[in-house]
Image (cartoon, rainbow, N blue to C red; front, side):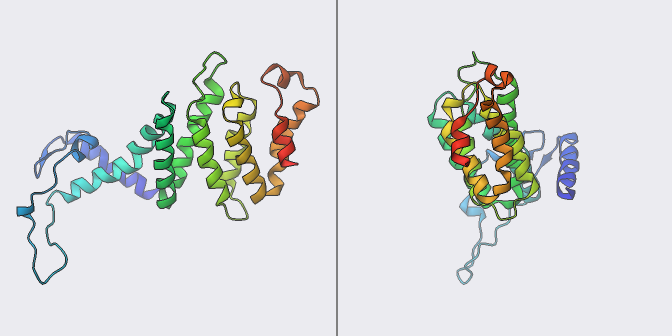
Length: 231
């Protein structure tokens, strides 16, 4: 939290002073700043007896801030938004990239889960039956969640139970369930494998529909496949 606050304060100063610094215009966006040429080899001084290069970019302090801002603020939201592409090849590549970032950078995992959850929330609470492509990206996101659940330690932390309750369970009653039911099923199976006590959270929402609830039947109906697999 302290690092985030420090970055926010530094970014505010960065935005308030659009001046040149070592050849870089601070009024540029982070992506514009990073779209730069690498230093000329003539600028890099090396010693034949030293394996390490001693070149240091004088604007590194500025560039380091841009990298941090890009990594923490810009990248996740924009990258995950690309899951909504109508070309089904693009979400596959986005999935690979997001999964690789999640696996490599532990400090970013909570933020990535939040953005993935927000994407699902938007579908659950804003999509309509006639939105025939609003489910795009959900199969790939659920595959990421499935992989995350598979790697959980026992006992499972509350953050993941929130994902189960607020993201995974509501998707059972979505309009386009057939488009991602297999991935959803795998998510539930992996979670229950890690925490058997979570089964009532899933079964209570789905199997209640089997008892004839009018509200569930009027929506998209129960998902007996989930009940069968968890049982």
